[in-house]
Image 1 (tube, rainbow, N blue to C red):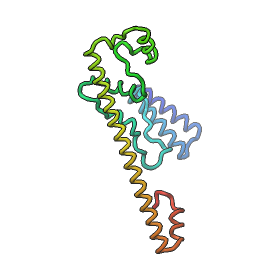
Image 2 (image 1 turned 90 degrees about the vertical axis):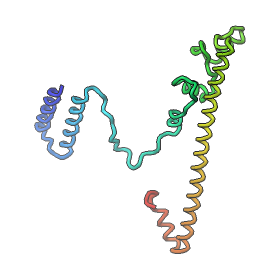
Image 3 (image 1 turned 60 degrees about the horizontal axis):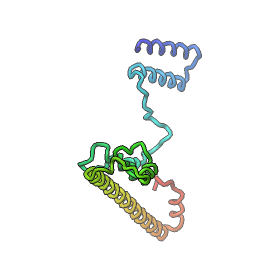
Length: 195
């Protein structure tokens, strides 16, 4: 496979020489194609990661808090791995949590069957019901804690923004008193990152 890549690279070089591509952009393009072919030859058919995104300049934004918050939530020690997250999906969508044997049915269909007189398998055993209710309560309490944490973070951010606004206002007042309106107007014309 590496020999085929070298043959292809040599053919590309001959093609570029034939076409007379000798300026810097052409050389860079040739090097990029060589690098891509070399990566493909060495790494196999793995898709190359596109880490160098030229559109984004500056620091990256913080990761989405909702996605990171759900991945780090622990729902209790008595739940099986993944069971708490599966139940939490139903809780977050405000849907009925399915019991054993009800997974393929929607909440409305189950309710219609129960109203028609059918007894679903999950509601027959008192012990199973107690375990199900305990697990659901564990997930509900973990989701409430997560929601409260998100609310407190938002409140903290709002307090921080108000304090920053007050400091900015105080700073502009002091600059206006000391240097006049010219300095304040110059500061307003400045980009946000240059303050």
